[in-house]
Amino acid sequence: MDSFFPEYQSCRLCPRRCGVDRTAGAAGVCGETAACRVAHLGPHHGEEPPISGTRGSGTVFFCGCSSHCFFCQNIQISAATGAECAEGRVLTPEALFAEVKALADRDVHNLNFVTPDHFWPHIRELCRRLREADVVLPFLWNGSGYHAPELVPQVAEWMDIFLPDFKFAAPELARFCMGDAAYPEVALASLRAMVMARGFLDPCDPEGMHTARRGVLVRHLVLPGQVENSLRVLDLLHRAFGSELPLSVMSQYRPMPACRGRGEFARGVRKDEYARVCERVEALGFQNVFIQELAAETAFLPDFRADQPFAGNRGSD
Image (cartoon, rainbow, N blue to C red; front, side, top):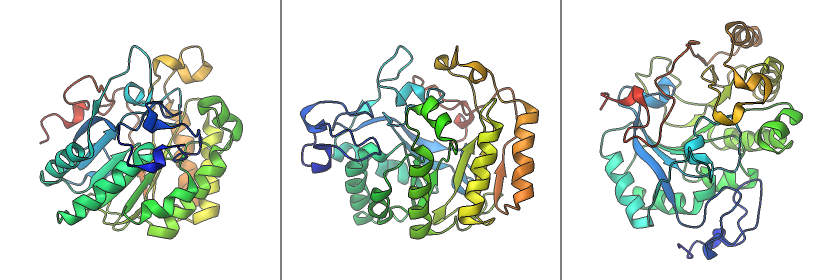
């Protein structure tokens, strides 16, 4: 265990603030101890164009998550238990640095830390060592939107880009999907702190020829049967940040095994549902928006039990 990171003792790194002593081998609400587990490292070509660019985003997928959304497409690594889960690898700080430095040397556009909150002490040390090793790539914080707002200023000392989700504007839907009705309040507070620290994504090139160096891009996943939630999210974001907020409206929802028996969550998003959300985006005048094509299949639904989890990345290196 990496007990020299005191934040893992009585852990308060995520909004659950479970207080578990992860240095003693106990798992927090995130499902993780103080041993850093990584599921996958590699160039990723499935992010938004200013993030993936032409050479890919250097993604580091951490195991565990404190959100517990039952529809999570990364359920293999975000859930602590279950037959579908992938184990990941425990990496010491030295091994983590070596592997991420090797990833940076593969000419990716940035280093992209995915679901990072509960391993922030490891990531902070990693970022320090990377900068000392003259790695100048932008560092990117890629999360669920469910971040402890008081942690954001610390994170912003090292992160150049924030890529948070904004999943729910309806507290009752947040409670149903991930067990915390406070998600909208927490996500808005953390997003305000991110924008204050780094501004909006810059540059925000829709073609990806000029990749982002700093700033915030917000993602929202449209959920089946929950158009009103999406409309409330858009209205809330527009009131809080205006029409220049960079926004990615995603149609890539796929029902996971845990979605069975949960009403409309057991199906995909319909064309008319996604169209209604896109109409609201246009009506509100958002200027920097990424829209997905609604398709029956996606090359970027991961299988973390494979050497290359994303089919869309195969042959791209």
